[in-house]
Every structure is written in C-alpha cells, then in structure tokens.
Image (tube, rainbow, N blue to C red; front, top):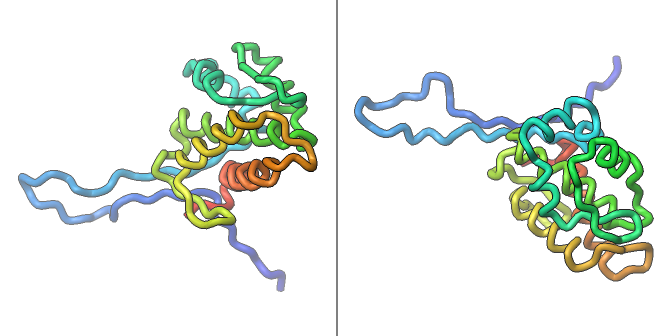
Length: 174
C-alpha cells in the first residue's frame, strides 16, 4: 500500500461555529486569518494580472525596491507584457532579481487578501510575521540590488527568497 503524505495547502483560523456569545456583549472572537499564498507564476497568468489591473496594484508594486537581472531598478509601469516577461525571465544569477519576484508575489498576496498581515511563517532563523518578512526583504533589496555569487549579501537575500518562496507555495505557514 502506498504511503500517503499530507501537506497543508493553506491555513485558516476561525472561531468554532457554535461559540457562545453573551447577549449585550461585544464579539471578542478573533477574525479569520487567511494564509493562502500564490506564486509568481499565478501573478503572471491571466487571473493574476486581472487582479493586479482591476485593483490598481501597480503603484504598490512600484513602491517596492524591485530589481532587474542586471541590478537596475524595476518599476512596474502597468504593462502586462513587460510584467510577465520580468516574472518569467527571473533567475538566481542575481539573487536580488529572484528575491524581487517572490517579494512582489507576496506583496500581491497581501494586497489581494489571500494572505493576512497576521500570518506567521517558519524561517531558518525562527518564526516571522509575513509583514516583517516583506519589510526585511524590501530593505535588503534597497541596500543591494545586485547579488551575484560571491556577494556578501547574497546569502541573506537567498534566505529571504527561500522563506517567501515557501510561503508563496504554502509550505511554511504556522
């Protein structure tokens, strides 16, 4: 008999259906926390780009410290073909480029509501709030947008990229 492996694909936390509530009191039940990551591949397809366009997320993306393959700044202009090419052509020759794609995907996950700012992930150095991870990754890109092999900042950026990649693929939610 084959061994089945279970993998959590998303985390949702909500109060029990029949949680008692006293009349005349405030509802102190915590809100549902949704942590459903979507990958850079989703954000380059028709469904992802429709969410970006329909919700006007271009400005929020442009506010990030995103990098191109050569380390120059990437500022999304609203051109869907340009956006798709930027995501499709990413690689880790410059780790900043790969980190940028995963940071952009997670920022879009938060903006679209598929990931709550209250979500936590497990990183190589312990638990981290997703908003703190977004901030840390953005700051790392602001400090160094070209991190080829041998760059002293590459390892840090790779760790951040790995954490974002795992969250975008729903592998490290707590």
